[in-house]
Image 1 (spheres, rainbow, N blue to C red):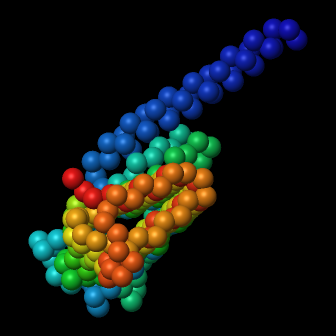
Image 2 (spheres, rainbow, N blue to C red):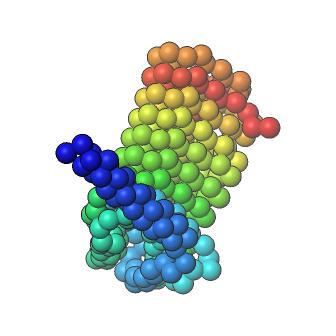
Length: 257
């Protein structure tokens, strides 16, 4: 009986080695996915809703993209040691793009990335269950809601409404005149290139930093635990309204260099 213990240990070790080797092999090929899936969808209206359950999203608006279509490319970024490849479903109805994927197996990383390209002139609404969202190039309204993941917007001028339950919010190289940004647990940082009409920011737990062009603003701030530094010119009658609130963190409102 004593001789069976090393034998069992060796067998278990062999299984672990096999699992790790399989994971490393699959992870390497998945991370270098050179054959992504691609779909094109015809837009009927001027508003696209993106409904994703569990993936990182990159959304790009540009004049070069084909009018009346949304182009979607998907890369699998995870790894499967034991089990089948992820089951992916795509559906498009009434200008609502629904992205779903399901993984199964003993050891699974089911992460994926979707790049969505739309023409200018399209309003986009994003509902992401779990994943980061990056967007750029928007001249029209953009709304992003994700339960768990960071949100980053660049090179845009349309109205922005951004919300994450857990993650940071970053806005830069933006000339939007209306910006609303909220994080349940994470920092919020806005860098605006045009004097805005309205900026509303809120974090449950994290710092809030807003950089603005030189002008006079009506500013309100609040922090449950942290310092407040407002260095922009202030006037309670100004039509340029800025609010910055956090439950725990520093609040900074300053003029951009």
